[in-house]
Amino acid sequence: MVRRTWYILPVMEQRSSRVRKISQWAAVLVLVLGTFDTLPYVASGFSRTILAQQRPYEEVPFETIQIRPNVYAIFGAGANVTAHVGEDGIVVVDSGTAPMAEKVLDAVRRLSTRPIRYIINTSADVDHVGGNAVLGRAGRSIMEDTFTDEERAAIVAHENVLLRLSTPPGGAPPLDSDAWPSETFTSRFRSIYVNDDAVQIIRQLGAHSDGDVLVHFRRADVIVTGDILDLRHFPVIDAARGGSIQGELDALNRLLDLTVPAMPNVLKPGRTLLVPGHGRIADYAELVEYRDMLTIVRDIVADMVKKGMTLDEVKKANPTAGYRARWGRESGPWTTDMFVEAVYNGLKSGQPKS
Image 1 (spheres, rainbow, N blue to C red):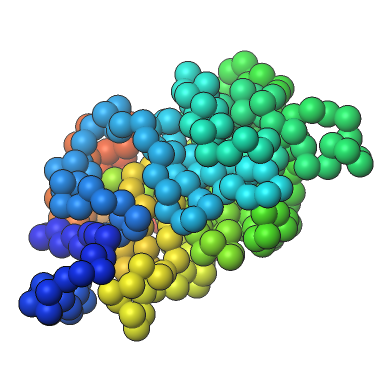
Image 2 (tube, rainbow, N blue to C red):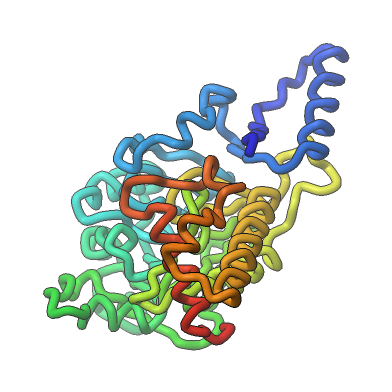
């Protein structure tokens, strides 16, 4: 497949009519040809090519990018970290790996002198919770003056995240208790109102794992997706921790319900921005393509399962052929074969729909 990418560049106030017309026709061409990527508020332009997007996992540079006036994405910390800044303090979504914790804390402190109030974890993955202890101890609960004497930020996550961190399977030692969630929930939503914004933490279990949540900053119109969305490769379905192909599709469809496209003013930056667990910022158009890809692959593998094909036969048939060049990985922590195996095993076992 041919990768088609559109980058949103800063609009110059003084542009000739010829340049303006070229830009307008380019936007129309993008809509006709297919989907596009967005890097709003970033002036790096066409230097960020598809080759850069396909860099090895370990080569992601550490950088902070402003994606909304009061929302920042921190890349290169293991997993993407999102910081929502306002008069009440800072809300951090995910905290990166333990070795990068001090660097993340320094980046957050550069954004505001106000304390970290909340740390929200989108899953129990170590690259999402590793910095919890360091960032938590550096913060202060927003409830400190009235309901608690604990001088640390509140760590919020689904209850399954606490269970994973406090009693890990296989006899592995538990994470430092300072990194455990201090506020857990099992309901469909966990909502807070902070920094003049409604923040909804939305339960979406059984996609990547059994602790997945989406974090929706409603006024800022930013959704942090965790590893439910990972545009570097096919989605990671951790079956050993409750992930499933149907749960992943349910989560992507739920995410589509919450995401608003850049229509009808496609030349303006207004749209819902998606901060995935890893990789670049995305929007509705790329989410649709990712969801459609997964639906097609699921249906192809399901048909093969119905025909009685074995896993080896399915792999040889290459059900991801139309998408392998873009999302496939032949090496690294999550390969195309691992993805196909997860989809096959989930369908073979007859996993119920979420």
